[in-house]
Image (cartoon, rainbow, N blue to C red):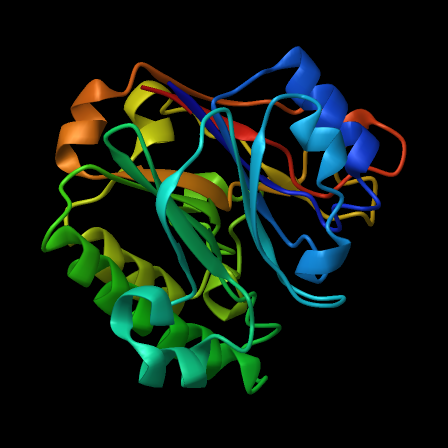
Length: 261
């Protein structure tokens, strides 16, 4: 079973890239973030023609997540409200950032964590609070489901080796202590990093800024992750970052990360 995550930074802009990648890499499930399109305008047919079922939770111009699956998913849940109830959903699901479903015996949770903008922005405390709600969401899932895969764009580099140059990172959004601690609080529920099970090297990134020739110079960050509950972590056979799509014309600034179970 192969599950990939990819922030495509607009599915309509990157449609040819994604369909070609799926043709070359026919994973069982592809989790997309930042689709930036309302559900009715999502380009379904190119994916159904490739044999994928399509599950969408989108909004206009911003955010948006989707699941593409080789087989129909069951118990698909949209937003925090799909697990924590309507009251939580009303407060936290205006931004479409969470979708999950069952594939075989695995609950796949696809996330687009808020960026936070900057430490001085009001979006920064929102991000920290959002991660607190995520912990409640996953804790609720784990009360009845033991095999949970959480993946997506976390917008957090958890360790200094996940950044090309960590100097001054304490004041830089996506690497502050508060963000890291909020994510660690989530992982303390029992989740472990699939990539680090197989690769301990630094210099391994999944996102590069469009500016300053960052990709060519490998000035990147590793912020796209697969976190696995204990039984799934034991089943993991590999986790790889495919940097090839970043070299395409007009690429997403992120690349696919795939875990093999």
